[in-house]
Image (tube, rainbow, N blue to C red; front, side, top):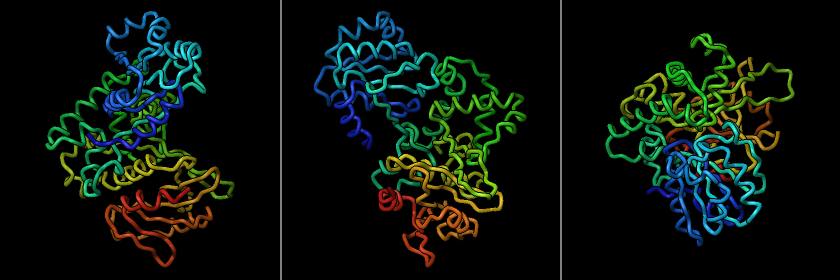
Length: 389
């Protein structure tokens, strides 16, 4: 079992809040980590899987159930299945305020689940368990396998590449045909959603244009935006916003959209093995999305990610911002001998940023005369990102 870096934080949070919610996509390891945590805390625990009709029946009178188990830590798995529980949890917590009473596991953002709008402010801490990220692997030599297969444990860990393919194909099929409908209590067209995933994979990291997708899929732009919101709420895609500044320059303002897990991306492209990535049309955008996701998962608190692009050609792949102040510009290159275009330097001048990085898969760590640092992704995550605050 790979040690998840979030575990110590979760143990600390259970000592500070009555409820801790662990959110993330299906099959990411939320149940495994909850069972581990339940063994670490001092109180007795009870686990309920809300997709199991027997466990759901136990909560027909949820308030009385929580009252009867007020001295237990109650683990509620797939909380989005019973969104009405949020209001009951509020009353139960207020009736007996005790830290570590509830661990909630969910595969969907509560903001998009019907009936889950009840405020638990001050009573609950929401955190996300992502697929395994690069800093959780023991050696940097795993980077190629991790980039190709992604971070879902049952995709990353099998010795056989065929096992990864079989699991990932099943995962994608289940999400498209069943899980998204179940997560949000809505009905999607399976064929439209399958085509939407395919289009997202083929435009990975591109500027999102809902109208273009709508025309191709024969639906309206609001429907496309709705689909995108649900995929974001299910932790499948990430929208990287454009950075706006007070300038006379004409700026690109639409977000970039990435399928977060590159294992999903590669299976949607039907890429069979890591070696087949070389020379594939998606390899550049795949590497860019991999770098963006790994930085996002390891970013210091209080920092945000954007991209910057002007219609005149100035462009920064990734911009780290503190408040409204840009503090680092990052260029993402697949080559270990990168050639930096003029547009990157222009973006740094526009934004008055002095910390400049070029990230590659495997180059040495060195400074150019311009003050720009070239390094590989592993070194950046371990040595440089922590210093950006």
